[in-house]
Image 1 (cartoon, rainbow over the protein chains, first blue to last red):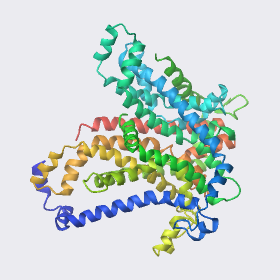
Image 2 (tube, each protein chain N blue to C red):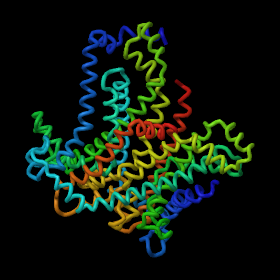
Image 3 (cartoon, helix red, strand yellow):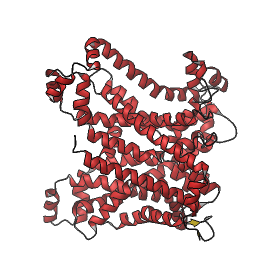
Image 4 (cartoon, rainbow over the protein chains, first blue to last red):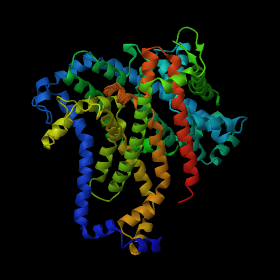
Length: 294
Length: 282
């Protein structure tokens, strides 16, 4: 490595450049790039909030700036017309139930795969590995027929089971890794003391696997909360719609109430941003750990 | 203990895959009994469905662009926020933010940013004196697909930045110190130390972007252009949904879905194969 570096050094243009650029200038360049990247990331969100408080005329004439006059009424109207209360309720119910089903079922299965010997264990694990990379979008038509046959089309429960079922493989895989990293001696001690497998799982293993469960909860919870495609296929009744469906519906109405659209979008986005900023360490770690562990 | 998980997997994953394969050889409106027609659906896809071919091209363009740009930009930003400079936590937090927002929220927001009458983008171009570039971004055939691709990149770059950042922080610092003593410049250190040691993270980062690249495009297209203008932003999934739920061609749509399934599976498994064998070559 060292000799290779010396050999390539002289004809290395960026190297020469960096020698001439003073450190201050380099720092300035780094800040400039970071500030531009950040502004183009954040400014659209401020713009959304600005737009939500403008009058129609203000929106069209004063594209860039903050509102000249705060029109809070936009929020009241958007909430009522988009029926946001019901949509938020549906999203909460569906996300919480899906996560509950997913976490219970997948953690038990992952534990069995990590610790127990049983016939077909290897085969089941291979199937899980193979199906993990298959996104549910590509099987949406047969999935639709399955859901219709089961009579759970247009129902919150139906969507809950579709969500839990299609993210099962990934979640099992992730949790299995966490369980395998827990030293088995702890469980052996509890087993010797007369606890059965389920008790060991509940009282010894699950508390230790809390970071793993949190990862799955954040990773999948976020996915369920934001999911549109499957919800769009399986939920057609207005009163069962989740937030993303409700927004699209509201947006596709005939009148172009732009400021109300901005207000509706702000109302569903601001709480997510607040939650993210408050728990950013959890979000960033959960989302990336969830990804990397695979 | 495995039973509930296996039942859910069979109902919602295994049966749909097999059933989709079965349906792809049938003509079916979803109500009467399916009629077996052999490979006619597939032949029609390739020979007579121009929109499908357009959708395939667009899906491939979408996939290649987002995988490339997300990872390159993500790595670039990770190198910048991996330095000990003031405010770096703020930059990381801010750049990751779009990851937490839904495609629908982002799609709607950006379709307004691209809006020709009150959109941010045209207003910005006007401010910079670039009036000649002003256009209706999403209804212009030349720019619509690119405009959507940009939004997907905007959403995910922060995610890949954080992945690469974790990789960068796991590289031992003394390697760089030794390299500096040996007279290695910044570029040499990047290509001889950083990139090779980052290979496992790069592998995962590319895999993740690849996995979604062919299918996680429905929402943005549906919300922003619905495949238009003149199918220039049509992707396989939007075409599939239109055929299935607007025209009731469930068998035909299943063939499309199964073709997509094969493409996604083959790419994922080939990539993992190559990655596994290549990981030892560095």
